[in-house]
Amino acid sequence: MTVNIGNHYKLLAPRPTVCVSTLSSDGTSNLAPFSFATPLSFDPPLLGVSVGHGKDTLLNARETEDFVVAPLTSRWKEKGVRAEISLGRDESEFEEIGLTENPSKEVDSPSIKEAPINIECEYWDDFKAGDHSLLVGKVVSISAEEEAIKNGRINLEGMGAIGHVTGEEFCLSDVTIKIERE
Ligand SMILES: Cc1cc2nc3c(=O)[nH]c(=O)nc-3n(C[C@H](O)[C@H](O)[C@H](O)COP(=O)(O)O)c2cc1C
Figure 1 (cartoon, rainbow, N blue to C red):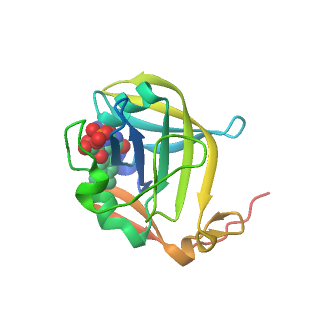
Figure 2 (figure 1 turned 60 degrees about the vertical axis):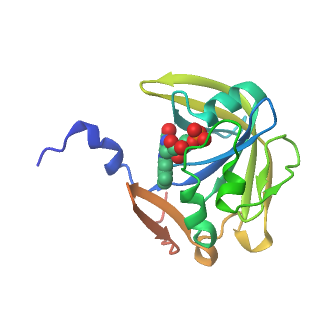
């Protein structure tokens, strides 16, 4: 069968799902979920999130030059997805959906108390990519709960990571398999 090219992202699935926290220049916090998200470089440690033009996340990250990325896990999945709600730039999704701001270690954008992993990033650059912009951050600090990490990586078996398939369809990754590499 031939698949409509506009559906390409539905085939590159499941995608890691994250919530990105930012601050506006007047100090209002912002939170939104994204699944066009990926690591980009080992050294320096860079990650990228592809954000639709004009969204608060992109505007805030450009303005105040940092953001926090929290992988969505089973424990806070509903609230994380609900952070999609569109509020004015002077209103915070944190309060609206009942998530808690924690001070971050190295950046001004808040970490998410309910998220077991918070990855703090300094704004690196952003690049136009069609109707989105690839927001690139340099990782400057990572905070994680003890149980969130297993052998140096995310504890999928213990927590379950949420992957986005499309629309309201998600998957729960809580099983790993081994494939030998040369
Ligand atoms: C699971 C999920 C994944 C999403 N992924 C993206 C994405 O990768 N890029 C994007 O621009 N919007 C994505 N969205 C939509 C944004 O979360 C939504 O537009 C949000 O209101 C943006 O908030 P902001 O204006 O505060 O940045 C996603 C929504 C959900 C629920």
